[in-house]
Length: 190
Image (cartoon, rainbow, N blue to C red; front, side, top):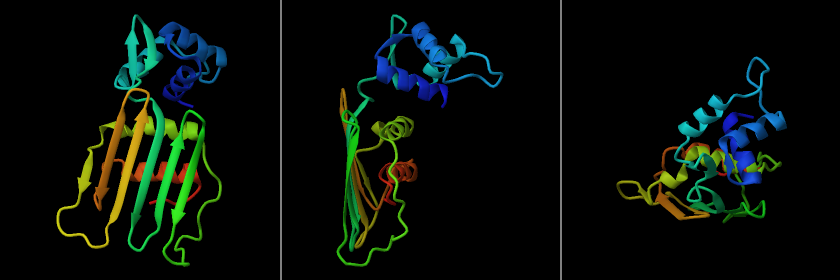
């Protein structure tokens, strides 16, 4: 587990902490050691927090996750003619998700689907990396589309709501987002 992931885990469980307290907690849990097997240093923690400044709020040396970036609920829809259509809702507060899949025919082109679902905690970390709060509100393909893929994503955080949608056009990081959803649900999504 990386220093970044450790910081997220600790702040998620303990709430806002001073940077020295965060370091003490990381070393106490013994989750991360550098390549020499030594305990992590304060400079490493500060460096990660400074590189990920858009995700953290720092005031009086106390660090917390920015409420505008801290997911509460994610709603995802994807489909196109003749299908399949997918709807996924991820409830981060209750650590659960709901997966719906519709097919217009009995034929399912993806019989080789994975069967094991992943972790909501890991999915949340991937959302932090993907920064979907920076996605545009609309992505549309130039020209006429007859059988395109339609999608929408709604991310509700503790401090904001982000919505994005598109028709046959996708934001940067779309493939990674789809892969993260596939790992979470245990189903091939897009």
